[in-house]
Image (cartoon, rainbow, N blue to C red):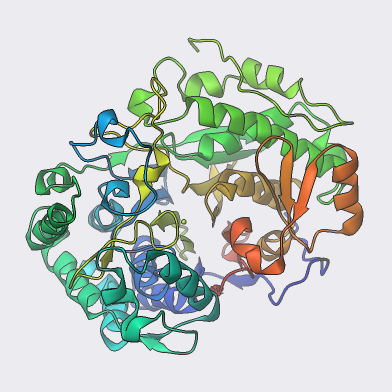
Length: 529
């Protein structure tokens, strides 16, 4: 394998090469993971330390009230963990006759991230929660200096959420969002993290913290109860996969959107994409059309795995079906596809690799920024707004219902080759994530770009119909070519980099060790030793 590092895209970074490596969207979190590795922890210990630290130093993307997913290579086999929460028992369709709210308690599903940390630590970790949560506790208690991208997102989030219950008390000291370069403390989160460590998470789901969450929900008209929290369970769900040449892309099964990347990759096997370069017009056009086809089915059929009925992942990934969908793609013009008719029957990301070969792709998110805006007083817990991922459409597989998981945007990615782990990767950023997985996989595996070059490359994302957003760093000739094919292209302003995601990649090298890249659109860092 030859990694190409071509200086063709604007970047401040080179790939990082090391035997132990951590890649995240915030440097303090990366260093927390490295500290744990240097203390004798493994990749799972480092991932938990990093994830917990991110809830403190990047609260604009995740929190103690997040959901989480993980794909893990333990040295012998691949595991998939779904730690997303379910709707409260009182969430009937009738409760949401006016639609699903984006903010407030009626957007809050049971948070699963803490349960993911606990379960991963108990099954695969070496050092124990008290040790791996220590960096996050220190930053929460003593404070940290706010980084630039996080600071900008904080200001935007505060403007929208300042009146939500508990938000300003925790995240707007002195009546405003902290600015980049200022110190922020979250002592409530430190207390919560200590309780999680001391009780192995039980306090969060059954004890004192659970009671505080339930009481605050009741005080503000929310439906979540202590019983809802106590009923939370994770699923070791395995992975679903798609092969492209000699590489397998693995994703978490629904309720996530990872299946869309697999579907698009399966369609592209039946196209001429191998004949083109990474920034050729035809290569970009083919990816866009395949992703559009996949997303039309994603939004029509994908939901909680237990509620998808006859159209499950096996049907959507059927090779004959994907070949028939690929046949709809025309090279000379863009199309606005509808959902298919498959035949029945058949928003932070981190990656860690350690010297033993253990690799993990872990993602956790509050969904939109700070999530619901609800923050439980004295705990530092910002509650996600994953309930907004449900639909109120009658009969839709993703219709809101009690105890049901909503459709999820956050997805970890993992690539295998010849039965061996190749790359832990992913991209935060809502709907772009499956689109980003496709772009990153093809750049690194078909076109042999190194992880940092792949992260630097200009991105596109589909919108509605024929609408397409492109980054301003994309070549003008390529943008003009896409317009000529009928794509309705909008070029987003440089300050809208958030919409194009934040990638982190850790790729195994043939001789041992790793090459890693961290997205320049974030404050992040890949580092190792």
